[in-house]
Length: 141
Image (cartoon, rainbow, N blue to C red; front, side, top):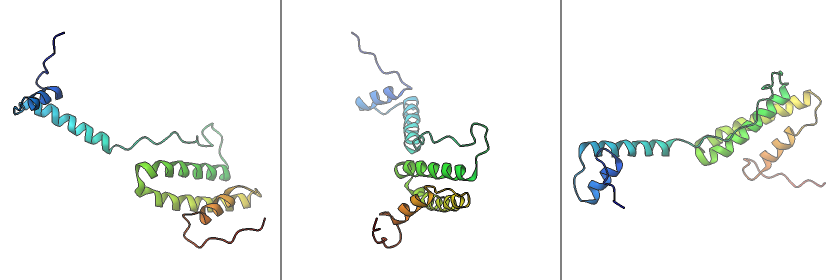
């Protein structure tokens, strides 16, 4: 088996020059620079967020306000999970938006006469380990 010689103008050609202790030729330097730029751009590109819950109006129906708000809460939760890993600077703003949306959901559920999960989830969120206020006393259930 015959070893193939790396061709100039490629990344492997650049590496061959380096291995032999030579100064790389112009085409090899350009190929290496191009590859380095591609790697850096790829490293900066955030991971694509996971597929999110379909919008309640995606099937053509007009969603009611409660369904719309529940969808928004779920989208924000999924977005926060993604942002924790890929863009931590956005987590605080997303948490505020989710908290506000949960408040709107609670009001919409109350107005519609629905005993929904919005108030329960908002309560858990505000009393959880990341809350801003003091912990609530344990309930006597």
